[in-house]
Length: 319
Image (cartoon, rainbow, N blue to C red):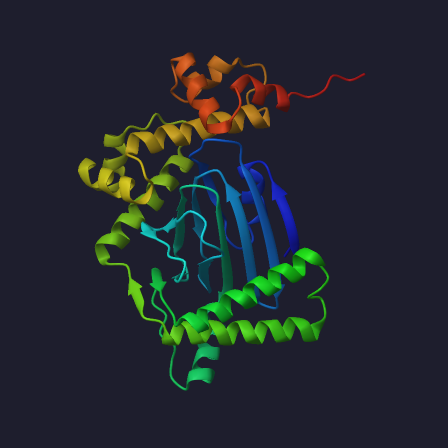
């Protein structure tokens, strides 16, 4: 597990860096170039993230079957929306083992994460509380007492700042153990004292639709999907698909399909997966038959012309 801070200018670079824990998939919703800073901290089996990213995006994270993910705001930057539920500066969210955490941002955003083995968290919870710690599956919002949450955020920030200043700062066993114990204690206190709001079955159903929609598009990149065919494949009505997409993704089904295709075109142009092809041929590959409109949409999303992306990816001629 890499420990330290890394900077990214391409979504796929960020995805690769988070593969071990989050298996992230990002779709920028623009406008502007992608910029992300990720600090990762390892405290034994406990893992921390601090993420600073822009522009607005939709991100899907897969949570391992033996892990619980806790996400929390790091400041009062523009609100982030997890599974259709807007975050609050005084709240954090848990995402249960084997589930998905779906994030939508509306501007530059800073957020943190704690990844911890579920069995370990439950064991610590029982030891500290004397009673079993109940942690439901799925996404749940928690509003703990202000003092307990301040402690959790302060400990998270202290670990992150220590690694940002000196990556080897937490290499000492005593320092790692001390931070780890304090963090777990603070997390258990927040989970035991904070009233929680669990997603309703209806909301969980719409969350599931968004995750399955994204997975279907990624599994079949060359298929010319339409909203009606997506709805049929997911086993829902076109109307229900539209409601789920607007709530979870901030756009309708057609808009998300178009966004997905735009990212596929960007990937091909960036990775030289279309050597010898003209920009209009790449555009047509993904269903864009009006080159002028494709160029405008592309530039608005990636802050450069498609031809500029292709030129940056071109190999240098041998001297």
